[in-house]
Every structure is written in C-alpha cells, then in structure tokens.
Length: 235
Image (cartoon, rainbow, N blue to C red; front, side, top):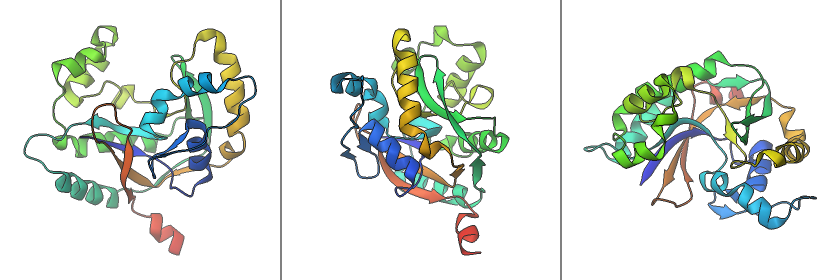
C-alpha cells in the first residue's frame, strides 16, 4: 500500500467531471468513464495518451506517493491529516491554464500563487514523519543523475525531488506527447476544457489517495476540508 496527499476537486465539481471524462476514470468511484470521441485522434492513440495519468486520477500533488514508515498505522496518518487540514485555510487559484511541462500537458496556475506554494511546503514538513525512506530501487527509477543539485537533495531528504523551490503545482492531463503531436494535443485540450477553465479553483481540501498494490490505480480514500470551507458556505 502506498499513500499520497493530493488536491482534487469535489466529485460534483464541473472541472472534476470534465477531467475524469478526459482521463477515462473517476478516482472517487474507481470506475472507468467512457472516453470522449475526439476528432483527429484515434481511440487507441487517446488511450495511450492518458495511460499513466488515468492510473493516478485527476489531482495536484502536494505530497508524492509514499509507503508508511515503520511503526505507523493508517489510522495515525489519517488522524494527523485531519488535524493538519483543520488548521489550514483554503487557497484560491484565480485561473488555471494548459501548459506543456517537459513534454506532457497539465493544468497549472496562470500566475504563481504564493499561498499555494506555502501550503505544499507545510504539507511536506508536517506529515513527513509518516513517510518511509525510498528504497535504492525507487531512487534509481527517478534517474537522479539527471536532476539538479537541489532536486537530488530533496529526493534524499524528502523522498521527492520537486518540493520547496522546485515545486510547481500541476494537474496532469497526458503522458509524454511526441514533439510533432504537441500542437494538435494542446489544441484538442483547449477546446475540451475551455468552459471549465473560466472559473477560479479553490483548493479547499486535502485528499488522501491510496495505491493498493504496485501498478494498481490510485483511488480516493478520503477528503479532508481545509479550515474555513464550511464557515464560508454557512456564513
């Protein structure tokens, strides 16, 4: 079993519904979703385009997948996550945009959001005691020789290279796309997501995702509202 702490919109959110339709799976239910019919993109090509992103489900990483450290149980992680979430305020992303990140496409904030970066930093530090150190094999799979000095340091200290100064919030939409196909895929994504990208996105929960066994799809174990979410709705 591996755990991860992500953000994902609530199951009723239009962005979540459209993204699940795009990926072909809903991480709330664990069930496949009928993929869209995309002109100029064969079904087989579309399936390959989203294979890894579909397994992980629609999310933004705050604390990357990890095994529980020796001596801890799931209930202790769950209790700490609930307590932490209750102490944090929601963060609004004014606008998301589609971006090409080293060959794959994702949704990213149009402008940097300092409070979002701080939330990610706090998640990393507050819950790191529950993370078992990565094995040598897990480190090797990340190709540390290709990393910057800070990324390698992050990997060794925090189990994931893209934290703190190397963090960039993103919600993955595709696997790596061949360079020749990137303009077409970006156009398709823009048309598919156009309507749901008009509204701001509120980071109003921390989601505990689980992977039952290596290679299994990630599923949502539970959502934990950030403090202020319910207050604002009832005010």
